[in-house]
Length: 334
Image (cartoon, rainbow, N blue to C red; front, side, top):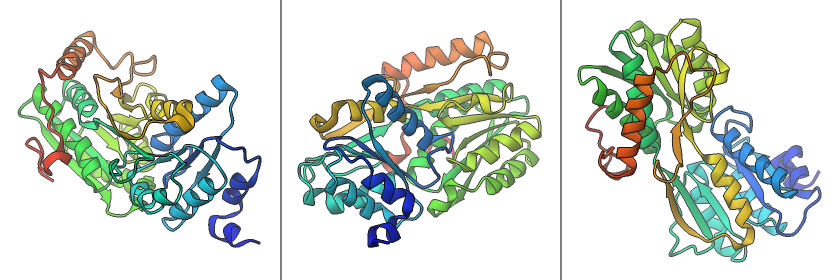
């Protein structure tokens, strides 16, 4: 067994060595797994769409621990993959640590930030999650009968507080007297993959009167959605369209078009332009899901109100506070 195999694991090593072709793209998932039905799976769907439309091939790896991040990035770069696309803010530091060693390789950090002035071969793709969360917050307030709604976040970081803050602002825009209960799952990356804890938090919020709960917690959110369905209240999914997981019980899903970010990065290939890109409502980088699974839950009045707010946010007529800009939230106390 080679040192690389011991370090990355057999599956990861196989992905790096099998069929390596110069300039094929690579995709490295964050902790939580490729099929988390949320953030990572959205990235996978974007890669699959690129492969089907172009006939191209890519390699991907699922991280099992924090220690694997930098090693995986180095091995992909050394094997000639380009660009190397990563999902999750935790890749920003490992990318910054190695980017200068591989100046001809383009790296992409989705949800992370790397200074483009210092690292000209890195692209940071960020989203205006607060804008999409505002819209689903409006929907939660309009659907709630109790006047109390909940939010369950994954790891307690500014990014997830950004989701919660936008959500609370949207709730309060519809019902200034509404109560928003907010809980985070934990302070380590394990918080993204703990559906049991997600279920416990959902039950606690339901006990406090919440009848709609928004989960922005990766795999942990699956426990929130399941418990909401079991307890006969509504939930709101995140990142991918999760409406189908519990038809008639998921009010909507806040879409974060990670799939588009991956698809466009792979399409650009080695010609990818580095720098920082922010995708909000105006760029269709975030939104909300409507389909047959939630059609009976979303009234015409709700749709009209949300579409009006969406247009006004995109036009700058409604300003949704970005928690990450100053670490404050006017609509919610953490």
